[in-house]
Amino acid sequence: MLGVVCLCGWIISLALGEIWFEWFDAARSSLLGQVCSVAWVFALFYHLLNGVRHLCWDIGWGFDLPQVYGSGYAAVIVAGVLTGVLFIFA
Image 1: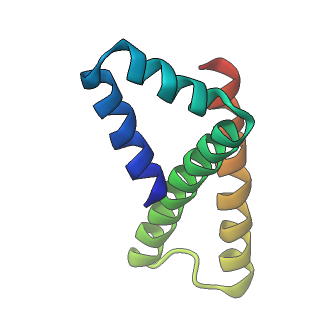
Image 2: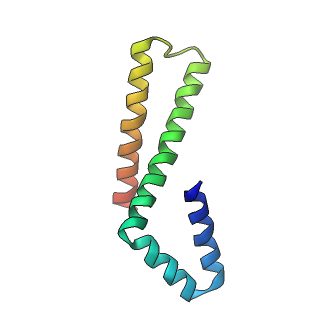
């Protein structure tokens, strides 16, 4: 929820002008801003991957306990890798 508020703040700062955008960009570029950005992107990727996981469950795949644990760990690991790739190459 806080990530969406920050995204809206960024869009509003674009509309308010250069001074507000520079202030917002400075806040986003701080250590706390970068940590929050990484956490938000990780949460988005994790949510996306768990949605795919639940779709697989809807078609009847992955109900055995080892597969449930495996897909859960895979969602966390892949979300971390995708987050890292996004922040390295973007």
